[in-house]
Image (cartoon, rainbow, N blue to C red; front, side):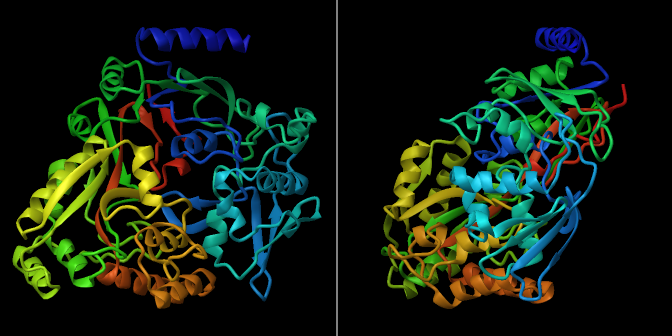
Length: 523
């Protein structure tokens, strides 16, 4: 019977006839980025957001506060005196969608499975827990996880709350779909759900539609809507039209200028929150002229940040010049740089470039990045620096960037997990530039070397005292802000528009922590 109901609803939503049903939340979004739904592979933000609705993790965060850890499948936990072994006590009575009870066996199986499959996202867990034998069952409702070094509580919680590799799957169900050629049932899990979350994955037609059905036996209580339908509408204009007609309740991917059209408009609500992303300019500190610290500082003083934030981004961004964004533990709210042409010229002259220089600025072909590059080109022309913009597709751009073959570029970055360590390592772990580099991310790509700061990054990850740890991250950010190879331009705002009948919706700083469990419709 339920299949007939879903078919009827799909027909209703796809034809655009009338309003969406009151017990169904319909979202218009770009779904083409979804590769599959196997938790061991999930890495894309939107995929993780969808998976959040049908998978659970050991721990969670308080809504709107990523500094406050909350119980998830684990109702409590403790750490050993040496800070190496975490013991998690699994809540009893949790049911998977199959009806099987969730126990310690499922937790151990899920985490070991992710390590065994070794897909790209596994580094988030493996950096602290590389060996499957470090994850052990103590009894039916207790699991111990040992780390290679002491790890702060927020760090281990951020890793274990990740919606991909650390989601807990129904081990009995997954094993039932394993084959000799596919012992971890990767093929089956690509399109099926083995979770315990508030919704069940009922249907996924690639680049067409996703249907989630309420799981009435969810351990926190049933969701407030019976189903969620996510329609693939890749074009923002088409999303806007569908929202205006009432064919969808939420438009997920409108452009900033489209979002502005709905502000203070009856019948609609704009929801926005600072996203944990960073848009920045990078200067290769291993190549002239950016091997000179004064030149890097001159660039930071030459940029018109307001023109980028309020002109190009049309307010879909907020000021930010440090690499830990607003809302994350350890954020340093300092924005010392602004456009000061005379100061920038003085710094260039002191660096030995009184007449400026020529440089190539790389960018992807994304319209916003091209517009930012053009603004920077105009700004730097005022201090005698001639910028030649070179656009390229993303694959070519990142191939050059990862190989350190650039001099100057504009790019973006986001947090992989909800802890400052996820950003301190990319932006500030930079002691070694050769093949032995431990963290070969942004600082490494820009050939920036600061061994004292690298050691501080490692110490901050191990520091268990929250107040001391926060001060360490303040210091790391100040060092990179003053001497590093970056000019951080802004933090993007995450924006969605919805019809005013939607209530209970909270947009998380990290999009994939956005839950639909408490969302309902008033009409």
